[in-house]
Amino acid sequence: MKNLGLNRFILITSFLLFILAARFASAATYYVSQNGSASWSSCTVSSTPCAASTALANAAAGDTVLFLAGTYSVPSSSGWSVPGFSPAHSGTSGSPITFKANPGDTVTLANTTTNNAVGSNGSNYIVWDGFTVDCSGMASTALGGGAIINAASNVTLQNNTFIGHTGSVNDNHALIRLQSSTYTLIQNNTIKNQLSSVPNVDAAGIQNFFSTYTTVQNNLVYNCGVAFDEKDAGQNEVYRYNLVHDCGNGFHGPGNSSSDIINIYQNIFYNLTGTLLDIEQDWPGSHFTNNTVYNTTNGIGFWSIVTSATALTVYNNIFYATGTGSNYVVSYHGNGLAYDNYNDYYGNGSSVIFQNNYSNDSLSTWQGLGHDTNSITSSPNFVSTSIPDFHLQAGSPAITSGRGGSYPSAMGAYITGSEIIGLTSSTSSTGSAAKPDPPTGFMAL
Image (cartoon, rainbow, N blue to C red):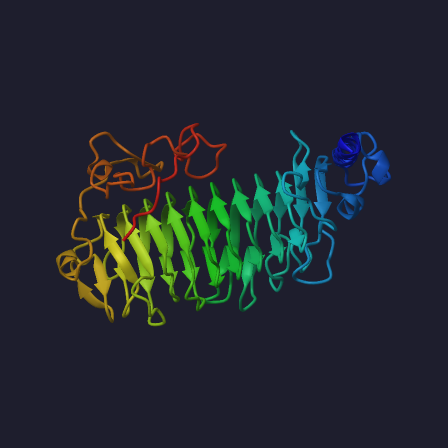
């Protein structure tokens, strides 16, 4: 009986190992070209590539599809939620399906359709890596253009350049759109030129509808109407190490959620012509910490729809030349702030804060309301605002004036000075070659 049990165990184990080996043996690298015509089984060498449509229809878990150099026309799809290049299958945890520009090749996906170019419609564990997605040729009436991730889990967009266009639509004009998705990772992309010719329409670099556990990190975002649009009820979102400049708004939060947890830390925002955080909803449990803000027309604005007194925790930020003149650094109408302290307000004029019904108050009045009792108004001594380089020079008061404890005490995006803010491939003013050192934990109130 013991031998029978042992033999059965060996048989079952061998069978499982055979299945596992077969699964990994089937994973391979395939090649695509503009004029490729090979069958799926024949395109495992670069000299016999297949068409992109063949790869999208056949790629399975663990496969890598390399697009050879060239400009590919994005095909039309069946609707807004389906990208032109739409994977038919899902990958798995540890074995995603990867669509990638062949290393060393320039691969442009030119979109002149009315749909988005890449992403996923219901397929999980998909990676898009290394493409230039050019939507500049789209009609002004076309929505979005770059990527759509709809009803999908664990989709990654990385190392891409997304080029937008100026739209004339009334709403939801986003270069990258997330819809009802989970665990999306958007990292090390350039996202630019998404604008609108219609007043008060948020042409967004990234727009989020009902998606959860999204991480947006180390991206360069510029020349967009709004960098990040938390449109409706996104939860457990992380925005970190992003470099955002020359946009309208930094964030727009127009939804009506009472359960958002949005953590925004160690980002740099500069030259915004609108509002840093334009919030029209409750953001309970959310943090805006260790960010650097420079030359921005308005800072953080909460409007009348906000009802929660625990909407946002704000500390260890540098606000330099933000809200000058008759504009504001922080404005709230009713409730909105759970905690606001240990920030550096410099070069913001004598009336740095608006609060409650837009009455004009000085920092001392704001402190009297229980906010910012430990904030400073000293120059953070950036290395340069003209290059720009927002590292802190030795002796900067912002290095030691932040909230301490379990959280680093430096104010601004550079806690250690070795972080990369923006693209990880850049070692200029955005950081050094070291990977970011994230905060050890958010402050417990």
